[in-house]
Length: 268
Image 1 (cartoon, rainbow, N blue to C red):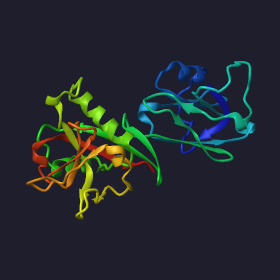
Image 2 (image 1 turned 30 degrees about the horizontal axis):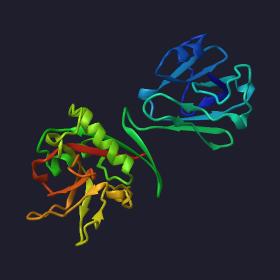
Image 3 (image 1 turned 30 degrees about the vertical axis):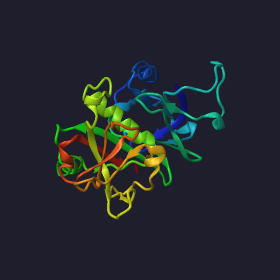
């Protein structure tokens, strides 16, 4: 636990329960990420699975307020107390290690995706996108997919990196109990955003509001042919007979192939 003089923004300790071992209580709880307490042992704990954003502001000793981060320090010397420039707390719970961002000289901020949604950091543009796969049943239509994501206030997500489509495929396999992508398991996939609007094979338009570029199509990771007899201008992620795991299918019904949808949103 890394203890500093500080407070959690928009939190009030006046009604918090008393716990003289606030820091140790947090340390012992596998889901606790932060303890906020004062000199009279009012204690408020914050937990990974129920927290999406937190802001910590450094205070003075005279304020009598303390914050303890659960983190791993870069030093192996347990007697070493790091100076401020050495403090870079990270949270190692869940699938993605999350760093506390030092947004100013005296403010630390933590953000993560809701629940167990997967976090992807994109570089062009520099944004963080959260994704999750949902299985709705074989023959899920495009409208059903869109409505499902919309019901949560999210979008059918596009993909900007190969890692994103690979994760969607692997997550789909887990949810469908596919242990090996044999030939009989090919084309068991989920809808993603993206529609061909022009004549070019890769002339795909994203409509989720945050996906740009075609990095996910690089190195033959997309298996697009636009259809031979029926137009196939929308996208889903699935295992195919080739390397490509992004396939084009008919908009609307997807030829009855999609089993669900990959939803997403930009982390603000």
